[in-house]
Image (cartoon, rainbow, N blue to C red):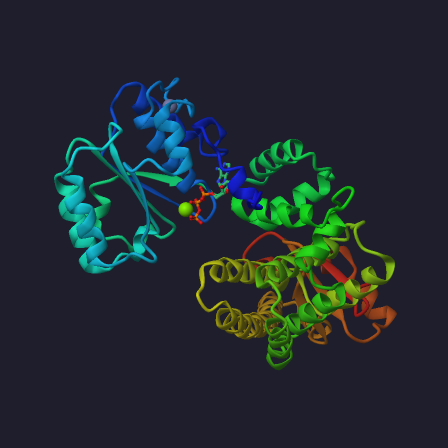
Length: 456
Ligand SMILES: Nc1ncnc2c1ncn2[C@@H]1O[C@H](COP(=O)(O)OP(=O)(O)OP(=O)(O)O)[C@@H](O)[C@H]1O
Ligand SMILES: [Mg+2]
Ligand SMILES: [Zn+2]
């Protein structure tokens, strides 16, 4: 028997088997039970989320001789022929390869005839956004006055590319990206039915990698199974999909953090040349940045080995929370863009360049802010007649601390004990605090530290 890809073998055959789209299947089942079937449906949503599968189920359900609670029975003559693909009254067309006006004209002529065997002629037009303008116009004519025995089901990942005139004539259903939990649930069913042993961690990891697309998840699982391993582990999945090495990731993170455009681009080129999966790479990079962020709040992370942790700590010294957050946000939106891009390489490189220049900008503005802050604080002190304090603070650096609401006054040189005594007096502290609060515009606490970050 020829090998059937796992995702085809496990294409849902009933509405109830479609995971994560409960809002849609409920409505469709209701319509079938109450015989209130529409003539034009639009199924939109991300890749591999169940659009084509649901369209096929709907096509059977409307023609089934004994539907059960709105579900096709999958056993009657109509269902059986439809499942084999031999029911002439159900036409599936891929608009990506049949996008011309002639293809639609053929349909227009055909719809005038009553169905050959079934109740309805059903046309499933996949990737409908690929139709040419002429084809859209021809389709529109049919949608304007559809014969009672005809149902159109249009499916697309890019509904925004459809003309309003088409959109307004369809009942629209938006398919959601699948949650990690829902993907795991379906993978579990498939593993059970194929007697596949897999660790929970591996299952979750596949679900995360699939990023909302069930087909991708099942395809990864398929590749793991083909390896014929005793039990599929997370490590095995990693190797299979080519998760980048820690060392490479840390170098890339370093280059981004130091906004070294040349370095970043050189590394990106290597990645592209090796044909690595850019999305997997970006996801791993985002995770690394996130871990850095967690480490910067002094929490421990167990997943790293000691020497890896050391390298992360070195990186941390070159950056701060704000910049990490900015990088994480930038990388996340980059990974979204890349998913739909026809030229992902170019988008990746452009995105990296942007990230480097943006990071530079905030760095500069942060520096600027700390000088602004110091001038402001000093002026406030002077205005209040605290000339002595003013002179003492002139030699310090005044910075917003990492935590919200904390201002650091940093002594860059050793402070002599007389000055220190003076500054640390309650009334001096209070005066400084007041000046800082006025400068920042909100309540903060003030901390005196030396260059090593130790309290003074
Ligand atoms: N919601 C779902 N529940 C269960 N399985 C699903 C679901 N969505 C997708 N699958 C699995 O993924 C495969 C592909 O799904 P389907 O063809 O319905 O996706 P699609 O939304 O039409 O994707 P595309 O936009 O890429 O055409 C199915 O054969 C099935 O194995
Ligand atoms: Mg499809
Ligand atoms: Zn049936």
